Every structure is written in structure tokens, then in C-alpha cells.
Amino acid sequence: QVQLVESGGGLVQAGGSLLLSCAASGRTFSEQVSGWFRQAPGKEREFVASISWSNVYYADSVKGRFTMSRDNTKNTVYLQMNSLKPEDTAVYYCAVGPPTTYSGPYSRESRYDYWGQGTQVTVSS
Image 1: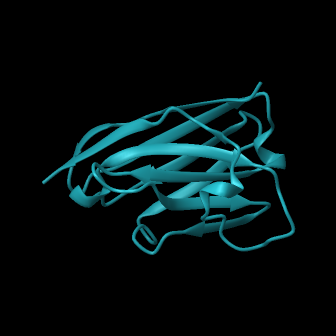
Image 2 (image 1 turned 30 degrees about the vertical axis):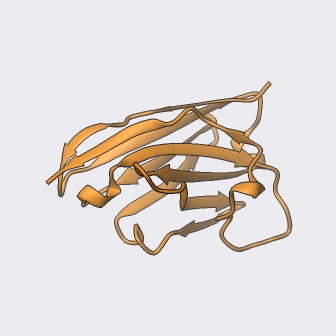
């Protein structure tokens, strides 16, 4: 059984930083597509970033501020979030899915088959 556990969320002032982690059991991150999504209050869940093979893609709203990485030895993916803005406030979810030959961003939720429980990020102004 695959289990994803996110951590690292919290309350931070605008301009601050947070590091989210997502540890996986039951599936090896290096062999999978992994992604970060977020859902703000009253809004639909949206794509933040994905890693497939060695390709990393970001949503335009976070490009240049967020960095997604993967540590295969720890079977963990990370999302380093810098220069945070109040509009980054959301519940952040990590997800994994089977790799395909597609080499672009894995921005559609349907490409993922396991999701974490989410971690709350709140950015105050």
C-alpha cells in the first residue's frame, strides 16, 4: 500500500520561506512521477510543480520562487518555497503516479494515483 505523508507547513509572514517534505512508503519516488498541488479556500485544487524523470516543471504563479526536488535515498520529495505571498495560502498536497513517455509537466490530477493528506500553509500579510 502506498502512503504519502507531507510535513513542513505552517504560518509564515509574507516574504518568508517554508520547506515542505513528502515521504513515501510503498513506492519508489525515483521510478514515479511526483507532483505538488495546492487548494486555497473556495478554489479548486491547482498544479504547483512536478518531477518526471529529471524534468521539473512549475506553474507560472510560483516559477522563480518555488523549487521542487527529490532525494532518492530518503524516498522523499521537497518543495522549497521562498518569497511567499498571501496568495500562496492553501493546503498543499503531494502526489505520485506512474511514469509515461510524456516529457512535459504533469499538471493534471488524473495523472496521479496516490495523494497525501495535505499540509496547511498560511502566509500573513
